[in-house]
Image (tube, rainbow, N blue to C red; front, side, top):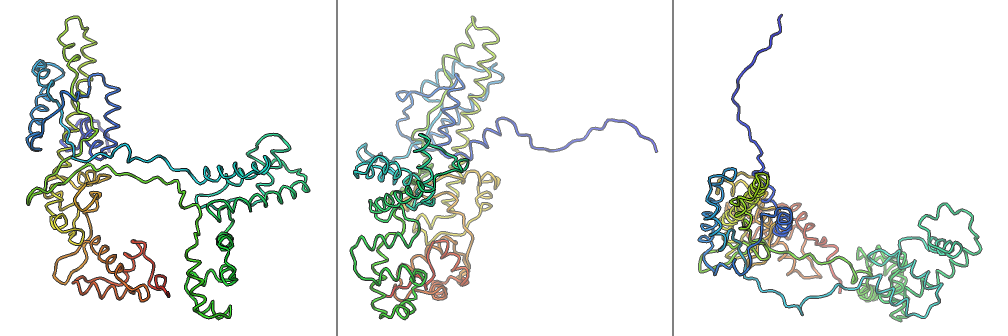
Length: 499
């Protein structure tokens, strides 16, 4: 057996991720807001890239396809450059005074300045204000600050009251705040007991603040404080909260009536009062800000046809800086300077072309979605069809991964509302007519069925199955239960109302 060293030639096919391809893929999966941030960063880093002034960037209207042809022609002109040589930059300079890149702006009405709102006060801010105007001593106010600082977003106290007393005692003895109290083991327990009693009084005071029931340790304490605040002398309310909260949750009114030796009508009346209490006092002050969606695409209906317009509002119109283009022909510029400008110019050209290619791809995908989901755009959610990525990919001759990137984190504004592009891709549910129904459409129909039910006699999952069968939709009961849970709707036993 002998070993030898020799050379072989082999032809293989492989995909090379060029910088241009990497940039195009990166831009394709960005939403509009991410794209704006990315463009601003590129304009900061690349001096050759600049924004077209508004006075020069007005297109004066026009059809969307004509605008696209203009941009295509100009970008073809740009890509003829080879290492910055053999290209008529002077021609490009003349054309760039009009527009070198086009954005598409939707006709959205802007909100007036008066319609905007400021950030609402948080629960902590609201309680701190009441604490500081309550007339308590400085010591009690400090204990109150510690209590308020340890509330969760629902308004419940997260730590034992004795820990509040410990921290306050250490602050008073040491003269400053401490984050770690575990290393202080030798406390004066008599002083701690006094501070614990003081903390209890301050806690009781805070629990009377607005919202009533805040700073409680558990749900039972929260509801009892609210009942006492109502000045209701009916002891039945307190007994139900203390001993039968679980039965009340499961609406076992007969069990409560039997154990408390009252009539079921009295239990029902008490349940009405308890249901009006707030189990989460901090909920109105939730610091969760609403998430505003800026649509990437607008779909308008003109006659019997739908027009796709990309939202370019706030998206800079880009061009190559005429100043740097002229610098290439400047004889005083050194070769190093010219090479630097050419390198930055190539990067700018790749970015401009990739952005336009992104817009073109999104438009093609959206037009294909409209083609498959025409009945949705005409009639609404109930007419949503089953659709998968492969259908759109084959229709516009692109790869499924490209369709997936286009539909990720992008939204379209239609006359039915704003939807994520992934909303239009659904699995199918069997139909007696032989044509599948989109799962999202079935969920919407379940929601409509339950919105019409009698609260005293709610529909069971089996009743929903039978109702859908009348609409020629075949579905299993367990599937109905799954969709109902996805909609956040409770079972019929917990939806039933006795009054």
